Length: 495
Image 1 (cartoon, helix red, strand yellow):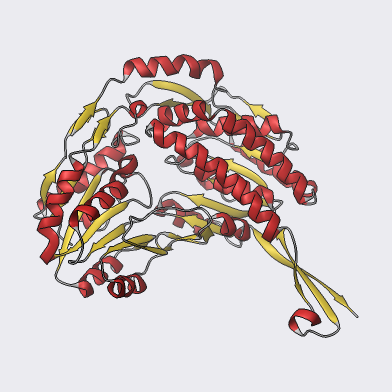
Image 2 (cartoon, rainbow, N blue to C red):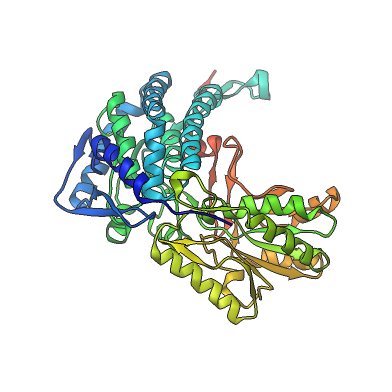
């Protein structure tokens, strides 16, 4: 396993650029940047350096943001679709021009490898372009029901997708551009106004997005950015009377709380996952190991769609463990600016939680195959844990870190049973050379998506993205994100 821990020089180099270009984490309400004496200090997960501050808004400021969005809605909703598209394209052009700067800022603020950060920015730009294309071809026109098409006599029904009003978009730390853009842009393009609340880690990136909206000429109140600790303003922000829809990505606990508080509002909740990779005994373990390691340890497992458990048939388990260990030892661990495979987890609390799950698994009879070493600030080597008992927390809870448990089972039936026993149901994978068995497993897994011979992943973005059980509800993806934040309105012409 390779280590690269030369942090300080690269951090200091980027800090100079950061101080010159960042808007020191201001909020953005009704077309104006908002500052305050009350700040939240942001520390890099790379080495705990103080890298900036964001505004901690008051409840009065929050009220101002929602009132601004409410007041801007009528004009924005009646702005022609092509005009909304023009403004969104302009905003996208500004942020893609600064893609390297944004990638550096993502890496500094949330510890993602620079290569993955740059890919996230470029993917987000493409998401916007694809959203525009789908909107123009499929959403920005009525669905017509009449005699010539459906045999309806003396009536022509035109059914439109219309905006619902003010949308609250809440994004997580792990994809501070992509999971922000994929909420904001679909909501805006269909005519909603937006109040955007980024995670605390990701707020500096969010402030940059506000700068691009400001430069693009959006009317005041159409897009608003509010910042503050979720623990302090979270309950208040989701209950504002002007909210008509909430789109949220984050923990299951917070998602459930939002669902309880947000009565009579449209909701899209993307929550946790415990994605299983089911490995049958007829597959090449070396190929499977490569795919599983890629799917489990990218961004140190801090993805809702990361593979978070392996369920493997006994007959092939020993060979798979050997192959997995070989692949894991090839992973590079270290400084995110050098684009390693394994980077620090977001904070010490997260690291401590991952370590507690590993320790609990060991107490219940598991063994460490490789990893479980702390080699830098919040930096844990990729860890593989074998013979994990179903009595251990690691078998069921989401670690959001670079640890992968192996659960051994006797047959396909038990594999499906263990997979479905989870409270989560985001995605799953099955690895086998037998198509019939693959489809059997896929059809019986209670998840939003099942991948055959590939690790679980979000995308391509045109695909619907769905979770069931404690993984959330509502549909994301380019079409889903627009449809969820609209309602049907019919205009019927009678003759």
